Image (cartoon, rainbow, N blue to C red; front, side, top):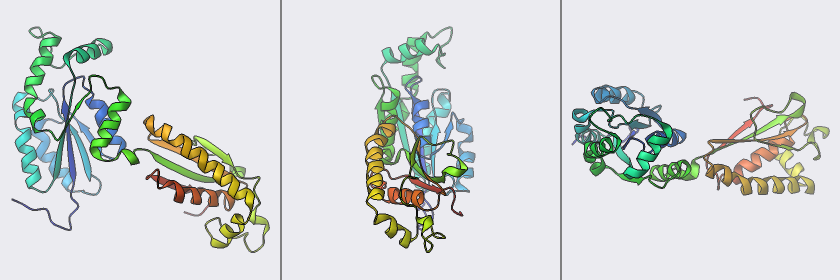
Length: 294
């Protein structure tokens, strides 16, 4: 058995398969939201070359999700289980996620979307095509690490189940905290805006003017004022109350803007303090101080 080199980044491959109409596209989008590089319906004949190419850049392709279903025909599907075992032995962390649903649910979904099942033909109506597909994919289902039955599951619930499989539900949404100067305009992509211009301004203190809200002396000066702390507590309380609802609604990003006159002191201080305290509840925090040198 070939062992992965201890200093080499172990790449992760998640194969997503299952019945047509069971939600594979939604599952792939959920994985993409988690930072996976996703490819759908790659022919089995290209698997070896595909693995070879992603192996050349393990940092960029650290986690790859690959959609495989009945559009790959029987001879191609039959090689997938053995191929996965070979990849594991070569040091690739391989897992298989299988999605299924009962026949009634799948028929209802195809009737609503008016899409054609890939196995329907003059000889096979939809119910027969579904049964044929179940037999065709049985070897993949029996080999799977996770099986999700989506018969009574909506899109949001499915995404959450996929995130649970990946172990990334907690970090499913990125919170972007941005400080800015009102005199240069409000950023166009913000979801929430808070105005800190009514707070005491360190700019009018000579020894603080050329510093920023990241400097210790500016922080201490601002924290000595009760109004600053009161505004911070109100903003934090608001975000802690409402950001979970956005995360539960499958939002990938929420951008919070805090502005002051020059975008260097008060807004920077509030953003930096929020980032430190929100990290415990929202692991993916991105800070952008628009008016500070990058």
